[in-house]
Amino acid sequence: MGGITVQKVAGALGAEISGVDLSDALDDATIAAIRGAFTEHQVIFFRDQSLTPAQQLAFGRRFGPLNIHPYVSGMDDHPEVMEIIKEPSDRINFGGGWHSDMSFLETPAIGSILYAVEAPDFGGDTLFASQAAAYDALSPGLKATLETLNAVHSAGREYSSQGHSAQERKTMKVVEAEGAVGEFIHPIVKVHPETGRKALYVNPAFTMRIEGWSKRESKALLDFLFEHSRYEAFTCRFAWTAGSVAFWDNRSVWHFALNDYPGQRRHMRRVTVDAWPAASAAGADLQLREPAE
Image (cartoon, rainbow, N blue to C red):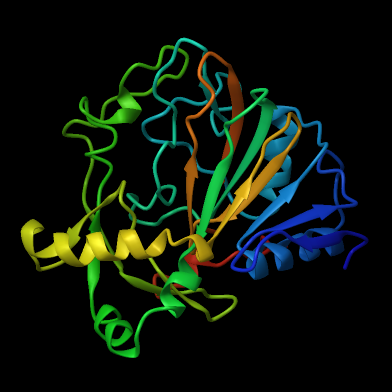
């Protein structure tokens, strides 16, 4: 497999990859091996990396064009790189709740690559939950019902003045989304374009309601799915050290950054992979592909 070693970390999802230096100009075979592990295991981890922002960007671009977050400012010289910093005085962390990155966009991002610049001495792990495993565990009747439904996603709740992302963070430039966001509709069940595996595509942060249903009507079903989707058997947990990297598939994975390291600093850098512009609206927008020659 391109000279790399892949070791599963949990039953539902997650694998740790060794034998590769992500700062190198990796050949196509190695990228293909990493991409294969990514689609198979849904989230992959690397240890003992040393990446400059430019090197992290270069790695991310092997998988697709990179996203510039609409509500969080990137680095001045690398706008695609989001610095996620929690200072010892901060009470609230970024990403501290179950969610799928960028589901509030018309065309959601396909993957996120997070690099640990500085990790706390204890705490600060990230939980991941397979939404493919969550779908698989549902009854045939509920699966059939969900496959007829769409859900409405928006950034308005999380990035409004009342949202956690806009509060009590001095070191990150988070802008409020009041009046600046739309609502976008996505199927509640999405089919992964590479594996063909179905996964739930709702999350507590950005899913507002079921299309055509009132908020009150939506709440019971969405609350059930949110509770079901974080069941322990669907999860894995990653303990960060400086130089660690996680690359997860937003098409089928939730994540949750734990806020259990009071008085310590945590500094991460994230790049987010978008779809190739040539992707079709029929679902290939979620596909990881090599750029055209």
